[in-house]
Length: 143
Image (cartoon, rainbow, N blue to C red; front, top):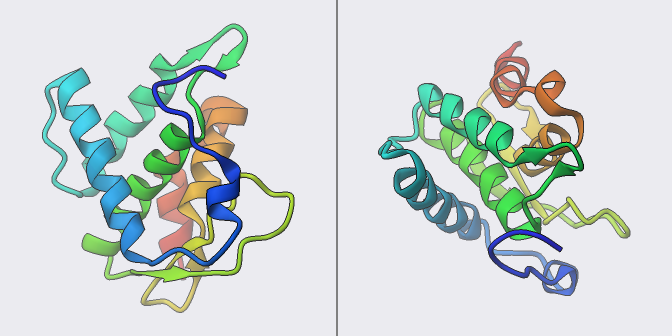
């Protein structure tokens, strides 16, 4: 397993996470983006350009080299932008069995939609730029 940290799946399976975890993981990834690119994340839609760039930089011929912690933190950064900029709120959701990318966190938007930004991060890692996180936000906010 590549990446910076090991993130055991069992930790996300035992109980529903506190929704505050989304903000904490987003903050950790914001620090990483600052360290790597010199960009200070302010949780605005333009920050998603750096999220996309990180996905591109972590992709090799063999696929995405980040680990689960990295992916879940990137997903939480996407979610935190939906919270701070678009009026969403973090919510805990029952994780689905056998679905490693389901950390039990979701964002409920003012339009009533519940979206899974962590799933969006996994999709971006698995499918490349065809699953843009910028597009994910646009679709999530569409009425």
